[in-house]
Length: 245
Image (spheres, one colour):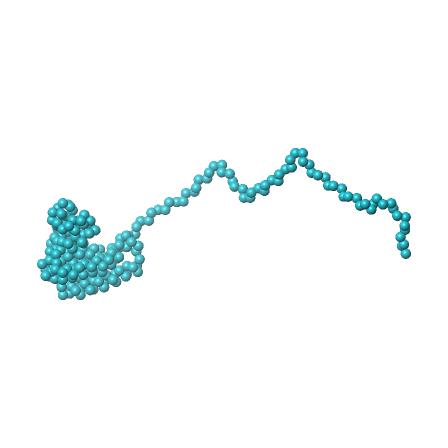
């Protein structure tokens, strides 16, 4: 049964910063290889929890649901308002709509179940509660969660568990959605005029035509040659008078 599954103590998880103590508590080879990576905390918790195949499948199903249908949409709503992403109203509306659909499905399941799997806290409850915690304290006010009364009851049940309370402290539901945080715009540097170079010669618009080469010394221009005389001009003048009639 899921009630007999071994669930890691959250108070112990907070003390596992020391690698030596961590390796003393758990001796699994795969756990040793991933113990120093905080990004692999979900894999570590899966190794720590020991469940029968049937219950393990149900737990994995709810872990995927919490990550893909709750956490993803909460981040799409939360990050742009915190200035960590571009704020687009249509994208926010889509994220809220998708989140409500997921919470509606979760609310239907919790209408007849105190916990997600079985009759005690499992890894599925730990992951789901941690994902809901950020939205519950920053985004989902009472007006928003009024549509999901069983989800609200589930959250209060989980955060008041001794181990959760030791880590999270007193949990307060958000009174209103966090306002949009805009990053302060950095003042633009005024365009400084470029310094002019001293004694910079001005470029001529048109290039000068190349000068014609001058004739060398001793070379004078040749005078025009006289036209040759007509040989007929050497003949004597004729005494014959032409007929004018």
